[in-house]
Length: 188
Image 1 (tube, rainbow, N blue to C red):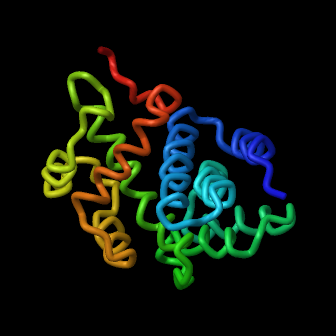
Image 2: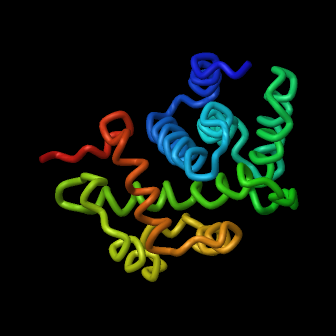
Image 3: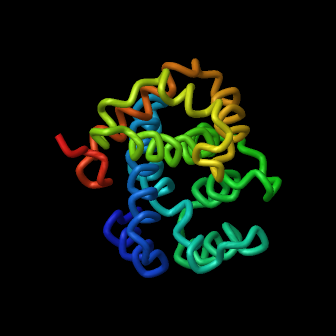
């Protein structure tokens, strides 16, 4: 059985920074929305999103992340489908994304981070006011949120065969559902 409270405690044990915890919560919300869209298990998909980077702060190198985290999750008895998706969200692992769970995690992870960045530069700092055209415009600016892998965002959408505008809006809407929790409710 998947236990969201246990997953949150595990995340907090390994992830001390508020920004990475908020990213995890944002990816969790996006993955729960994706589960509804693709008729997946919201708990499995949500907890996969919540834990996908739980080891990153402690093991930030490509040699360690997500390998160390997946080993920990395996020892704790998390399902193989989750482990495969987490491995596949890091393109450099070479793990093929075969399931909708894995493809969805890859398609939302970098985009969630990018939408956070787009929201932070808005005067209102409210994700509900971010439009797909703003996301698209900022994606073209290579200096903006330079650490975000734009190729991963594009490849993720192609793997799922989703329209760019629809996907951007879908993720914005998912983040809007938890905007207070992730600090993107704005200052209105």
